[in-house]
Amino acid sequence: MSSVAASTQNQALCALLFLYRRVLGTELPWLDDLVRAKRPARLPVVLTREEVAAVLQHLHGVKRLAAALLYGSGLRLLECLRLRVKDVDFARNEIIVRAGKGDRDRRTMLPVALRDALARFVAAVRRQHQHDLSADAGWVALPHALGRKYPNAGREWGWQWVFPATRIHLDAESGQRRRHHVHESVLQRAVRETVLRAGIPKHAGCHTFRHSFATHLLEDGHDIRTIQELLGHRDVRTTMVYTHVLNRGGRGVTSPVDRLLATGRLLPGTGRALGRDRLRPNSASVSRTSGTMPREIQGLQTPTTSNPAGNRPQFPPRERN
Image (cartoon, rainbow, N blue to C red; front, side, top):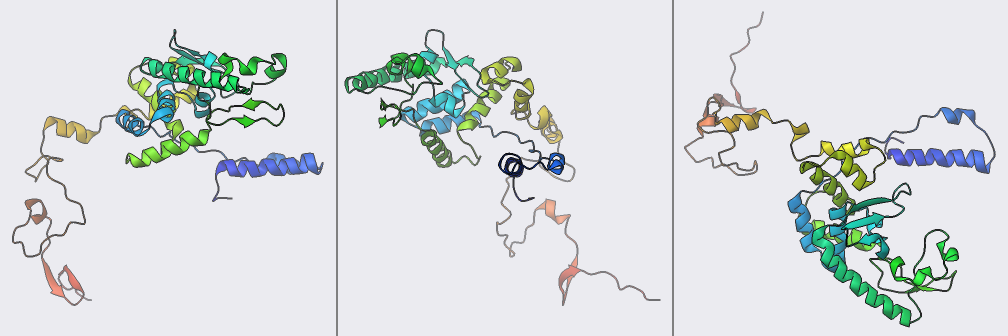
């Protein structure tokens, strides 16, 4: 099992425990002493501000608006796509996330730069909802048992999705003509293709916008407790991981070579400061007919003579006893 991830090993162990305890009804005490695999700590992938701008510029329409909300509000993918109209407060520039991770609610910011664009989009969604109502549709799924408690709430404007799907489906259980929210794979595929098209080598996706949101807020000097509340983390130690990916080098330490170049000191034996000469790739061909040789290389040359084994340094013969 060394070639699989820790989560795969733990899943296999849980499957064995369920088989013996729930299906076969057999208690195996030695299974309780098995050591579960530990997930290694990984640093999140973070985009720079320029990379975020490049990705958003390559997106269009609803996909750009949803991706901008992921980055501007620190939302998870499904938290964004499952937004209801009643949970967006344009007057207070606030978004209420309902039943987020861990079934917890929280408040986060609505970016001022996106307020007008989102308001125009919601107005277009309302016109679409009015058309659905006239076509004996306009239903949406309600959480938990609210559909039984409020039978007509599924057609109310406040419960409609901010990002509705383009098609109407017939619910087999209730017989209602409903409109689901945009499927998550639509935005996932669009963001991944855009990252590749923008030439960004990082393995970035929709959740990378959330990591970038937290990191950039820390770079701007915001309090980590505030960022914890915006992200909805239960423990501040989860938010502390973003302090390790700040754009300040390794742990915020200045490299000694940066300090050396900042003072303008020259390295011994060279006529230029390190980093100021033109670099060439290692695959560049060097002309053997050229009679000049860089001064930095001349001091590294060792006198050689030709021998059957090739060009090797000639050492004096070793005396034998």
